[in-house]
Length: 218
Image 1 (cartoon, rainbow, N blue to C red):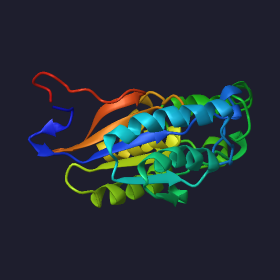
Image 2 (image 1 turned 180 degrees about the horizontal axis):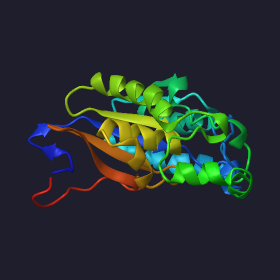
Image 3 (image 1 turned 60 degrees about the horizontal axis):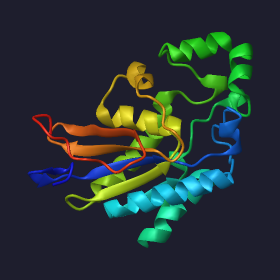
Image 4 (image 1 turned 180 degrees about the vertical axis):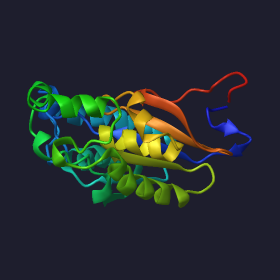
């Protein structure tokens, strides 16, 4: 029995963050700038791909930014799936915040940063609202999931902020609560499963394969 053996086969969506970049190490805000993987990031992608391939995914979509596309390519090489790239799955555009370190952002835009952390609708650096990111990304994920067979698996390779807002939208959470979903480490993933009530978050920031939930809350 697996986590998803719950009477009828469930569709699953695996939202997979890209591997490490140099800007991740520098705590520099990347946004939609096209920053490549480091050697460590490529190794992370290879390791994660070997695990995700065991889920026998049916479809693979990805952001068209290099760090996500190259991460997805590792899984494509193992599974034989083609990758469909979507600009809509890019990371949040953050205007003048992009390229700045966390310390630089808090020093220059402290009030704006704190407002965002409180859950207020903020155009970070003059860029996108989180709800606008969800507006573009979540429909792409939902449309791809709708094409899955019963019990099918979709892998979405994207970015931390975009994944968080997409999860929030698909779960129907109030946007003010989306930040309560913790961040994803490089090359970790979250798993959504289809239920009678809609999508349910089954795994978050995982780097191992899902295990069965034993008990009443299956």
